[in-house]
Structure formats: C-alpha cells, structure tokens
Length: 320
Image (cartoon, rainbow, N blue to C red; front, side, top):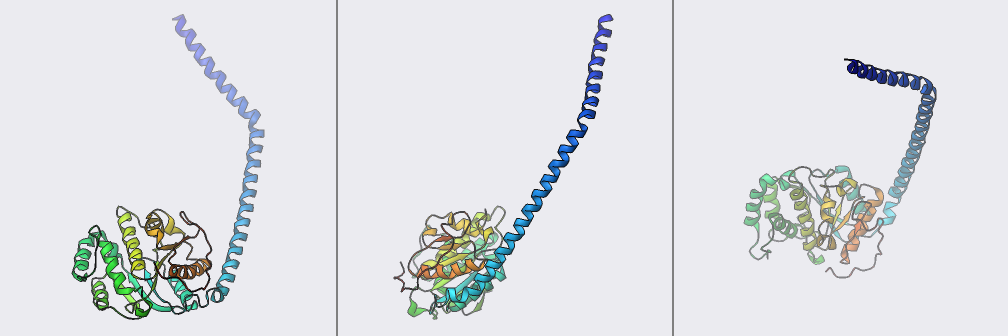
C-alpha cells in the first residue's frame, strides 16, 4: 500500500513538474518566439512581393518580345516556302487559335496553302478501331505495299498519306485516283472533315497537336495513332512537321509520344513552341529543312535539341 502511494505520488509529481515547466517555458519564450515568427513572416512576404514583381516584369518583357517577333515575322519567313504546297492536319482538340496563327505564317512564307484536314475524336477512339480497320482494308488499293506488321493506324496513315500527299512536285495540286473516294469515306464515317482543297495533294504537311495531353487507359494508343499519321504523311510527301505547345511534351502529349519513337524522330520534325511567334517561324523554317531530307526536334521541352531554327533559302537536295 505504501509502495503504491509512493509510486502514485511520484507520477503525479512528474506530470506536475512537466506542466510547470511548459507554462514557465512558454511564458519566458513567448516574446522571442513571437518576434521571430513575425520577422520571418515579414521576410517571406517581402520575398513573395519581390518575386511577383520579377514575374510581372518578365511577363511584360516576354509580351514585348513576342509582339516584336510577330511584327517582323513576314520578313523573317518571306519566300521561304515559295511554290511549296502545304497541308495542315488538325488533330482532335487542337487549339484553333494556334492553327490559324500557323496558317497565317505559312501564307506569309509564300506557301501554296492546300487547306486543312481535321481529324475527329472518332479517329483515335479505341472502341471504333475494328470499324476503322474494316474501312481501311476496303479502301486500300491492291497495288499498295503494306508491311505485314503494320497496325490499323499504320495502314490508315498510308492510305491518307497517299490521298493527301505526293513527293513529286510535278504531281502537287493534283489528285490520285483514290483521293476523292478515301476522303469521302473517311468523312462519311465521321473520322475527319476537310476545309479548302486538301485533296489536291501537297508536298509538305504540318500536323497541329492536341491542346491537352491524352489521359486514361488508351493514352498510348491514341497518341500512337497520330504519330503513325505524322509518319505516314512524311513518307508519302516531302516532309512533315508536328507543331504543339509545352503541354504536348508532357506525359500523354503528342510530341512526347513522337520523341519516344527512335525511328520516327529521324524523319518527322517536332516543335513544342508553336504557340509562340518564334515557334511559328521555326515551323516555317523546319518545313524548308524537311525539303533537304533533314529533321529536328525544336523547342524547350524534353527531347528538344535546340530552339531557334533559321535555314538558308538555298535549293534543297532531293528528298530521301
């Protein structure tokens, strides 16, 4: 009984001492701790304001730079694509403003604008893959050589590439015998729509990437479908460029998918700053570079080799 009371008194004494210590410590340190906290808060607030001021200044500088580059774009791209027929292919959910700005730059470069082929979400819908496969197999010409390992999207890319592109400048602005049928059937199936005269074949193509990355279980297949088409346009013509913004280099983005294909990046150029004036100038010069059989990865995202691109206007060498 004595031992129990002794231990109980000892425990109570310990907790009482702790309580008294905490109270005394808090009272003694309250002033210094409060002042330190207030000083730190003031410093953080000052730093935040300083950083905000810097961001505003940088944004203003960027806007001024963009405005200057935009105003000088006509002279920077003048005649770079003179005589070249260029097609724009718009991926599902691409930014219309970005596409219109690129179309404007192409015209400023003297390109013969072929028009636009706009893919719908149905084209990359994995629930409609069998339907697409049946359509492609039905429309595929008997004399078209197809790799036995080719996927449905590879075959669709070959078919659309043949309908929309040519690597012979003498055949530019003409249709092949399957063109109207292919475009009509793809349109009737709700897979694409056309604006202008893309059926009168082009030698160069620009594909506008989706504004946002693909998401979900079908991400890889959806992005892969469009990468296959970019490669098919390149193979059927004299070159193709994939144009997008910074988001296209993030997981699920089209340019990220392209840059993950070791063979495709050797032939198809990608630009991840096409939503800026300098990026659009790069699109124009990248098309010119494609005529010489060269490809590059330009921009600021993962996998980009360099940012600005200015090529000479010398006569291009034959396409590879």
